[in-house]
Image (tube, rainbow, N blue to C red; front, side, top):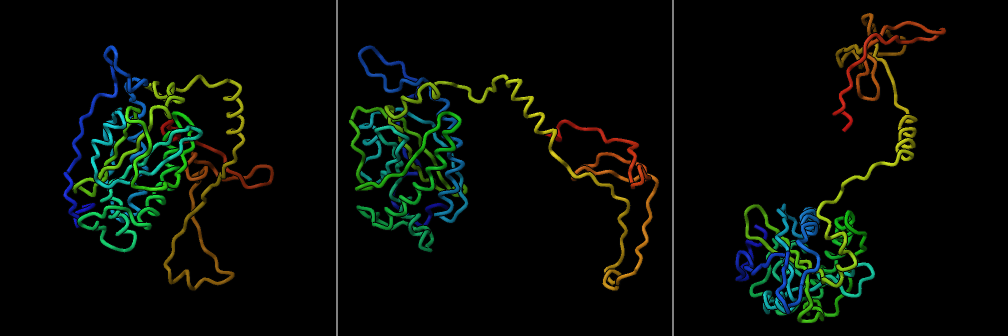
Length: 315
């Protein structure tokens, strides 16, 4: 299991009250989520979980399952209260030119297990857990964040081009200076080896940092293709039609024992036998068959049959 050697006393899952991401605020209350149901961000998180899995597997040296939990929108004070006083790593992640930073939040147990595995151990966290992070643990979290930034860029690309950057944290164990009532979108991810006890880590997106991308987040279906411009389609067709492919005909494929092959010398004759029709190949595909002959004084093959073309072969 991911952390079977460790016993830090944490529960199998961190229970959390989750309100729906689609809010209908009562009169006189603040609307934490201005983006609607955020289904697009949920799909983005599911795709991101698959790519982040590799980053964690490289540090834990284990084959893992990874998934995205249902996201939620919370006041930052409520999120901090939910995490409690347990040691956590708060790694700031810049989002393009946004003034506020996203946060990569990791359980201390997961950090120390990765650290132990990184230095050749079995991935065992100390028990009880330390009250602060060692310099090597902080460096490891920074390394993980650096490897996660291009994965975040690629996951967000279908929605909005955001360049993420991992930033140095003066105190990795200190929570960011967000206002207590500042709303944050909590995207939680799970990691586990097989059916073992999972670890969870979060990526917090301040709602203020997401507002410039609100239009993309409120679109429920992405990837509907607009009608292709005729000029672009024509240019693409001309380019494809200019691609060259090797065409060859296989006259014969004789076989002989290895011992005979080793005895071959210059001047030896290898007899071949072929019928009136030979296969004609384009790259690795069979185009059809043809008759061997001559044309304009050169050897040639006259096509006598063509293989049917299956459109599925080109998808």
